[in-house]
Length: 351
Image 1 (cartoon, rainbow, N blue to C red):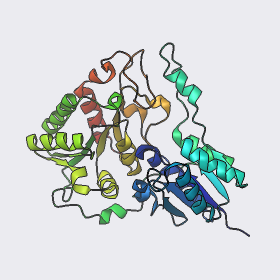
Image 2 (spheres, one colour):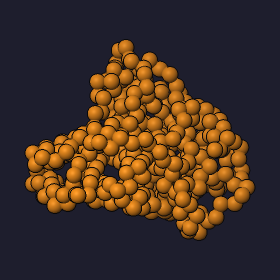
Image 3 (tube, rainbow, N blue to C red):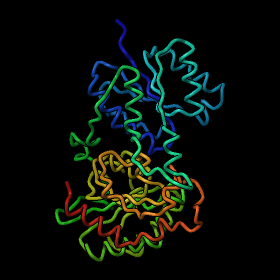
Image 4 (tube, helix red, strand yellow):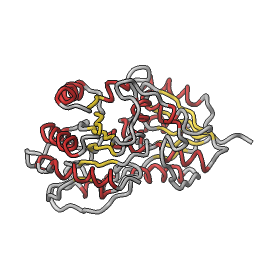
């Protein structure tokens, strides 16, 4: 009898791929005889390479090696040689649509994601909004597997649930966490302006946390040029602050450090999802986007989402649309005190 072997496709941004991890993990645990191959971009390898014995990772550079129709045809031939028995498209964009079409034409069992776009349009409408919680991306992914005959109950705690991070050796600048210390992560940036808390206000959050918790250490996450510039300025001004991304130089190390944090402060961004995979509670800050859209990090509480109610919110699912008001009132009017107080609440009630 042929061994069942499922191909799961999800390219896209880091946060979207990270959200597949709890679902793929649950599939692997609940179907131990099923072979699972995760197809994604190279950055995602650390998410899956040690996830479960029956999970393997396959990298595809769709912007270079497998670019365009010619490249996708080459990728399809490479995939078809592996004799998959089912194809799960968790992306649902032109590239994955094309691959899915090729698999369908050759008689493969295929299912793809329903992104519930109509519900999202109603949630972000410029006029009357339908303010209801939409199904999470995790469940959207699980629905694809169910359509292929693999229903799953999503059960996931952390990439480090078995204690692997205890062996992680951090750079000297990070060192060993002392019993008296609180380690706080801050990831103040995101891909789009509609999701970024103003830098001048986030600096006040840093100041207040250090004043109120002098035994704490703050680690900054984010590796872009703007992030590096801001983090360098803050680390020069405030003791006990460290540019973690600059030191760890890779997702694997950053995840390990996140697993040691007492709390992470993040925008609606990839770092919210990375901290979630590390089993760390997140105080998330929301502006143009909203938790109702279904992108809250795995295992995170909406009670720890810092946001203000406005008639125009949410105006965007991904935060990439121009502000309707033109002033990003939704972000600028969140006070640093709101973020600090919620952070202290999480630290004092750490699960």
